[in-house]
Length: 403
Image (cartoon, rainbow, N blue to C red; front, side):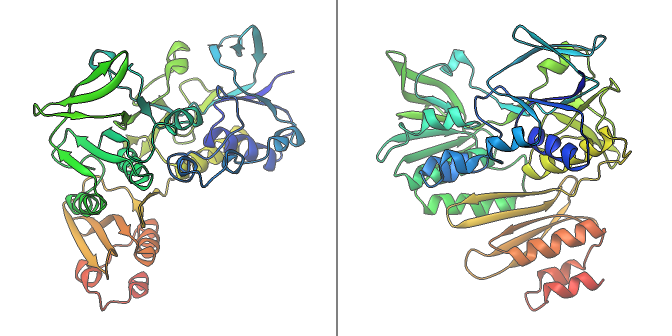
């Protein structure tokens, strides 16, 4: 019996099969995941889970019984090795599963350190899935010395949690500043100061030359400025890449991810994609969004379109990051901005508003939920308030919504 098969049991895959059932799809439905556990939340992994504040079961998006109750065939700990587009089948181990429609929600994978500089040594970790955190946790102990490679959000969040655990942290970033690829200088300055206040040694314009080892375990690191530091563990946070190898083997079009149209359909009309692995047209460009919100929203849109809705995906991007006692909330996409408007609050409260000319494109809000909520609503409505009014702390932000 053919039906819909979904490959990738992460946030996007779980959202897609759930929406298919809630939209009334009653046919055969299969969800296949490489990890041996049901779909779970990833953001708490490097925060509450690593800190020991969140149990494994609380990470699960739904109880495992949900999938049986909804007549969803859940195949865990299994890897799809090939897609036969002509026969419309996927191969899982020694099994062949037929499909009418196929959805790829294969997510992304962390960029590893090259083996030539020590990326294969014991004590070198990435933070992407449950197994990664379970391996890291015993090493991240009070008094340990950690090198974090990469000053993006992954690296900074890891630094914050490691510091809470009593780890002595050095963070290196090859670029001129932390968060250079994803945020304005003002946001970089804010978080640099925050981490330094918590004892993190941040070194910018400095990369990792190679790791120093003894008996196959990392014991130190030589940096590109010639300095050497002793380390007990290394956390690699140098970004992620879309997991497209299966799509590539199947001959699908790839363009910074699995290229899909506005409705989520790949170059094969029977195959769809959503989440981190998919790139889609947006405002005259092709983008790929790495966020929980996009994984859910795009997957739900694809589910509806697999059932014939014919809806274009219209993302309303938002992101967040928790570091120490600061919650960063981001609304919009900050591409193409040419100036930053600062709205200063009390203490650690501040928001940075990204403008391109007179157009508001994004907002970074640190411990400023009202600024985030107002900014998000303005961006979604296509409204751009007067920058002077935004900067004036006497302006009631809610009044900006009336423009």
